[in-house]
Image (cartoon, rainbow, N blue to C red; front, side, top):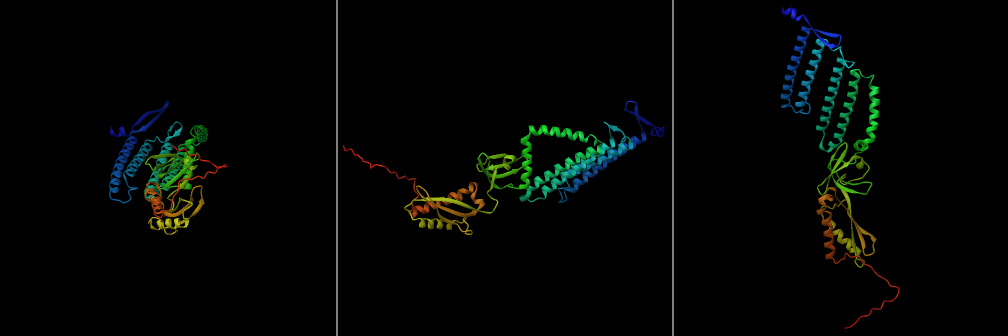
Length: 367
C-alpha cells in the first residue's frame, strides 16, 4: 500500500485544460531537498556569525554576509525542489519559470557583489581620501545594479520586449527630465565635481555664486545631490551641487601656508620709513608669522587722507580662518596699532581741505 502511494501521482490544474501530474515520490524528494537546504542554511549562518567574532576581516565575514549566504542556499534549494517536481519548464506570463529563477539569482548575486564591494572600498579607505572613494563606490554600485537589472531581463526571456521597454523608458525620462531638471542637474554636477575635486570634507572654503553672495565655512559632507557647509557662526548650509559647481570656489586650506594682506593708513606728516620699521618689528615678534617667506611692508598708495602701508605676511592657513582670526589677524592689527601709538605715529581720520574762490571775511560779534 505504501509503495503504491509513493508511485501514485497528484494532478494540479496549472492551466485550464492542461493538468499537471506530479508523482508523489517527486513531491517527497522536493520536500526533503527544501528541508535539507533550510538546515544547511541555518548551520552556515551560525558558523559565519561565529567566525565573524574571531576574524579581523569583518568587512566580509559578518552578520550581513551570513544572512546573504543563508538566503542564497535556501534559494538554490527552492530551485532544486522545483526541478525535482518537474515544473521549471512551465511558463508564467509567457516566460519559462527556470529563466525567471535564474534571472533572480543573477540579480541577487550582482547585488551582493556590488554592495560588498562598495562597503569594502569605503571601510578600507583612509579618512583623508574618504570623500573621493565614497563617490566612486556609489557610482560603481549603481552601475553594477543597472547592468545586472538589464542582464536579468534578458535572461528572463523578455529581450524581445526590451526595445519597447527602453523606448518607453526614454519617453518617460524626457518627461521626467523636464519636470525634474534641478534633480538631474544636481546629480550631473555631483559627478563632475567628483572628477574635478575642487574641495574635500574638512576644507575651509569661500564660495561666491553668480549673484555675488559670499559664503565661508568648513565642508561637512559631500553628497551626490548636494554639499553641506558649516558656517563660522555654527549654522549648517546645504548647497545644491549645480549651484556649487557654477560658483567661484576659494579653498582656504588647500596649502599649509597662505599669504595674508593688511593695510594701515598713516598721516602725511608721519615718517613712512619709521612706520615701516615699527610694523616689521611687530611682525618679527609674532610667532605665527613665518620667517620664510619673509614678510614685506611697503608704501602702497597715497590716499586723500593717509599714506597707505601694505603688509604681506605668510601664516599657517589654519590660523587665518574662522574663530582663529581672533588670535591672528585681529590680534596682529591691535599690536600694530599699539606700536604706532607708542612711537607717536598718527593713524588719521578722513580729512578735507576746502578752497574758496573769494576771500572769506569772518565777523565776530562782541557782547
